[in-house]
Amino acid sequence: MSEKELGEHIITIDSVSKAFIGGVQAVKDFSAKIRRREVVVIMGPSGSGKSTLLRCLNGLEEADSGTIIVDNIPLDDNRKHRLEIRKEVGMVFQSFNLFPHLTSLENVNLAQIRVRKKSQKEATKFSMELLNKVGIAEKAGNYPAQLSGGQQQRVAIARALAMMPKVMLFDEPTSALDPEMINEVLDVMKNLATEGMTMVVVTHEMGFAREVSDWVIFMDEGQIVETGTAEHFFKNPQEDRTKLFLSQIL
Amino acid sequence: MSEEIKVRVSPLHWLRQRIFLFRHPWTDIIEYVALIALIIWLMWMSTARLGYYWQWFRVPKYLFQIKQGKLVVGQLIKGLFFTFRISGVSLVLAFVAGLTTALVRLSGSFMGRILSRVYLETIRNTPLIVQIYLMYFVIGPILGLGRFGSAVLALTLFEGAYMSEIFRAGIVSLHKGQWEAAHSLGLSGFYIYRDVILPQAVRRILPPLTGQVITLIKNSALVSIVSLSDLALNAKIIAADTFLTFEIWFTAAAIYLVITVALSTVAYYLEKRFKILT
Image (tube, rainbow over all chains, first blue to last red; front, top):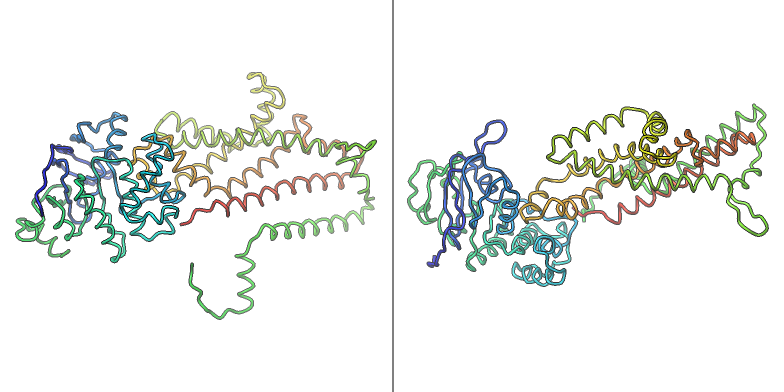
């Protein structure tokens, strides 16, 4: 992929651990730094802690120990900090999680009006731009249930973008989609990457990783097993665990 | 939406499906009327034996009367207006109490959770009639509440407890992804409830909530024990004065029925109107 200029560190994860009630250690002593405009793909078998790690980054899960700093704001007990970080970090979920009682447009408008305190008119103008960008402007008045999975996920991306986030987190954004809809979502994500959005993506889409990611983290049992470019993972993965995993998904 | 699947069904099966799947408010109304007719017929049979002398013609003046070209409201309708008033005030307050209790119960506050639980269990596990007496004789005077205030407080607390459980059930029934999506957008707790959670929860709980509103109206008849002249007390007084026992009580029952059925019908259409596509 073409070289792009990476910025300073925007996310710093320092020895983060997270266990669930019942003692399952989801994330163990995880550290990583992510630069502005970087696209990072996190891969790993199910239960390896990748989703938990991602959800720690915007405070949906609270880490037991370690520090997370996003755009110079520490993610700590301070509720204000958490809200600030959530304004800067957009998230896209595996199951879309659109608000079913609101139309596509209203879904995208909501946070702009309530959090960014924009007027209805301003919000709608920007929302339509975003819906246009994800190629779904004609469905602005439709309710989520009237859209296909791929369309819903694109609305969800537009909704996250509406906050003008500095970082976008994607939690297996294409795993719940029918195969023919995966590409329409990946295309939107690729465009975002090209525009220089900082992205952390949990996915098993190797094509996407290869095309747009700057580096890939392979996780297992809550820890980093191996990191490197997508090329590195394709051509000569070092660890046995990585080789085994890749042989299963490729 | 769904594809038609041609399956041979027996006429009996078809009929059963119609009966159980098709429920229109009219179905309820017709059933109710049939039931009432049956009861009246039974009463008629038994009173025929008793030699009861029906005097329906004496009833209308307790509803409406025309005196010197002016419409005068009778005792029963006056009682009905009072029932409306006390139910209406209690309903609004019970809504607030119920929602507040549900939110406190679901909040992070330990004391709040305990308090709301104690409130709920105390109210739910004691008879309303006892609570009305207690409010009227003990708590009302302490708070400086009169007859009306005490009765409203009793009804509010009683119905609020039940409503809180309905609200809570509606709120926790929503998928946690809704919370997560709302949180991830940076919405504050207030807006999450107002714009995301409650609009969905309220639509889900509309049927049990309607049931609770109807219960409230019916329970308001109990305030007659502290001499508030609602529909029930006025009916009792008239029946005692005139010995029109059956006529008056049937009339009062019919009035309650008309109100509650009307409410059910409104709720039925609201439910359809605000249905969330899934």
